[in-house]
Length: 114
Length: 114
Image: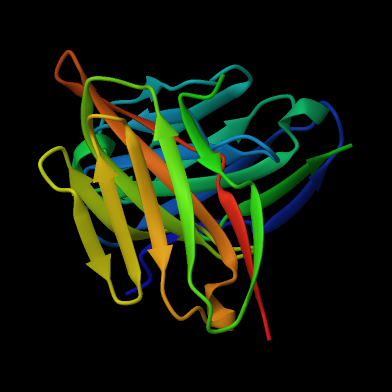
């Protein structure tokens, strides 16, 4: 049982380049999330998908897009990377709403934009 | 000002000793409070979850307490082990218009030394 799997683990981008972070969960969860974690700050929600077919903005959505490809997969795309997007990105999932359910996190993706 | 504040920011203790981590929150209306453990380079993992009506919850050597009146929670670690070295994150959920919003604290970094 892999839980939440995200790729790549590490990535270095040049300013202006684009990339997609992939995420998949095998727990049949309805809700999926993308967070970023920066030093001295709590995890911040970028985008979430409450259920298959829906996506909504979180706290810090600017510069990102997402796709809920199916119930298992939720990808995060940076169209034109900026140094401010250097961060650790976590994909997560929960059976239902994050507030009322345990959130299960992936192992993180370390992104550096130079 | 963070709506979920944790203290101390970092802590070093000797193996075998006990310690207590604090979490104060200002968000409302409160739904539940969770503690997560995040090992270096890994995603957070849930330790405990407490609703408004619960004032204590244990998970092995970890005991979380909640005082909803003063909006304070603590995580007590008994007989610490080297493997307890990690960041501990307090997470508070609030109900708003049928949706539950999740707010993460910035974490306490615990180092257990031999």
